[in-house]
Length: 560
Image 1 (cartoon, rainbow, N blue to C red):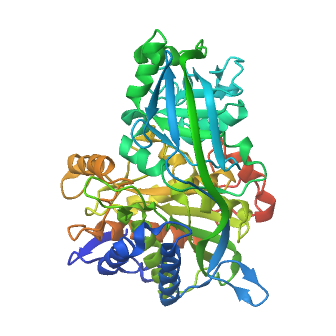
Image 2 (image 1 turned 135 degrees about the vertical axis):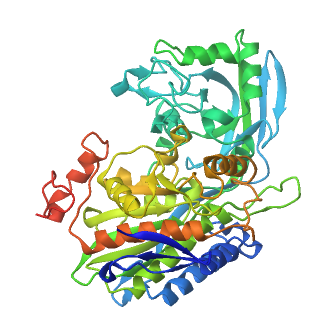
Image 3 (image 1 turned 120 degrees about the vertical axis):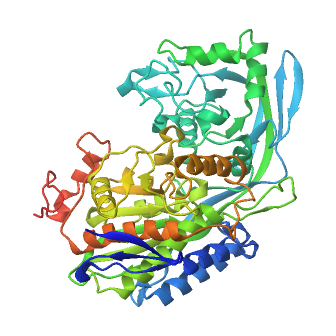
């Protein structure tokens, strides 16, 4: 039986039989990485800025010192430390001019206040919309497999559709969408994609704090700065000309002018018989954007396996944050991203150091720091489309994003409610270390679709995004939940996400110990953990079973 001990509040050592000894994770070093990467000197780590160059240099230095080998793009002379990630970058040249016409009266909308209009990523440099009709389409969901269609054949070409955030049964509707647990249909990314498929001129998501799981400040800061996307052959098929959010109060005003109310249309949107509601309002939008294709980078280090180097376990975290943006009330323009996600990067650096000190594992272990997560999981999506290591022989992905810095927890979790054998392995290891798995306490936030493991899940690779526990040893669940709420309200995607001397890193060290044991066992074993039989990702994974020489029905520990 393994046990976790806290040593002088500075490190955690996993005691076990000598052959399975786990390394010590130095909390001082964990803290130093976060303090450095989350400092003003790194300017919020925006992709394709001077801060990216500085961040990559730091990561390469740390990976080198940890004992990794370069694991990025390959050339005849060897591998680089990075994978080139071409991205479309778009930013407004001045604020876009937006006005809404209600009952013949035009009212200007201030960017960042009533509306957050994203710079275009549909391949155009100009957004020019004059008098486009507004149509409310409920949750904007077309899901035939769930018997749901919010559009009912309406012709939406050239119109602006207005949609609710989350999905139809978040607050007790008639749908089959998992109750409080958000499905992908609830994500704003899906709503923009569906709007493009419907031929709409634009999509405006109505912000509400509870179903969005974050406040307007987060929306403003995340949507009024520079936008990125992967380079697509037909970007207009994924993005309508206008994508954005509006405040709930503005939506209520639109509904009132149309002879109804916000409460009435929201209640109607929860029913299967909902039909689109034309609004007595039009929208004008005029803006010019600077667009170009730039190159950002994923940073990749590897410890090649001694006997099966073509089989890989990947530890991931995103290195980017929002960069420099609009000032907050204190005039601070640097979105430091200390918790989100310098903590995850600190973890994989020290995880690499720990593995490098141990005997080499049978399978390879890859440490992947991805770019542009904050712009839509773009670095991980690019990797998943252009893998450096075969996806069919990628055993598992263990992602860390925004780890706990308030001390150890009795429990741990993952983002979302996915069922997969990789989670079973994590839970079993947690039990050996005296920790309890708690299902995602807030599946309504859509966390499963908001971090880089999702890019791997879509291509079938078993992947989880680890979440530090909320039942803190110091203060229990009450303190853990209070900290989470305060962070979401006041720091998430805001300049105040900064390193603090009050933060405790022994909790991250405990999490690192757990994740190390799972990765080490996979790297020295034969298991090919799979998704559950009813998972939407199972068929894609099973289609690559031949690459592994393993029957699609094999259980963990079995090998073909």
